[in-house]
Length: 254
Image (cartoon, rainbow, N blue to C red):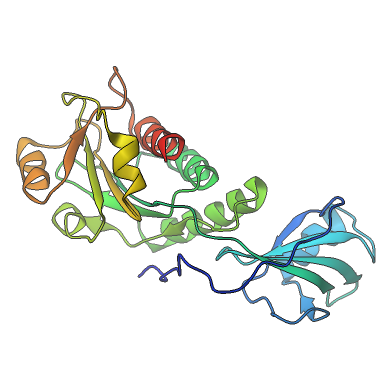
């Protein structure tokens, strides 16, 4: 299950330093108290000391992927590698929250798709199992997707990491509380008032089909469930291209 995210954080932001904030490191549990000492895990510590060769006193950012960013300085480079928190920011979650239920392409195309979607600020990726789906990701692949999402979030500076949900049968993907529901359809028409619809939506769910597209029965069921057919490209796109393009269009319109 996907961990619920609070779209309205109650904490007031504390401005960070105006100078170079330094490289970002994942820290799943960040303290609220300034001056707290945070210990980096083994992988993050290795990256800080052996790859980046940071020194004591160097600025770093600690990010939890759920909207909190701590500006800190490196306090110790020996094991354990620690940082001292100087200031804390709480970023509001991107709105609308985009839930992308998409078929998964084969091989490295899937990893590239996850990276791009995370950089664009997708809220949650739901691997969609449609009638024509070929790839059904197992737990180890979902774990790899989660790690790739975190790395992309760190790289892009997105304080809210894309969450990875469990594989979702098509029929279950139709049941959601999203205010805006879209299903990719190359035979549909563009949505003229898309920006207006996005302004009134806190959550948008988009369905992207497998190679070969959705079946007539799936498209009919989606429409009955309140999904609007949506064409956002004049051409037929591959799965990963369609997924990334859909999120990019929504982010540009929001």
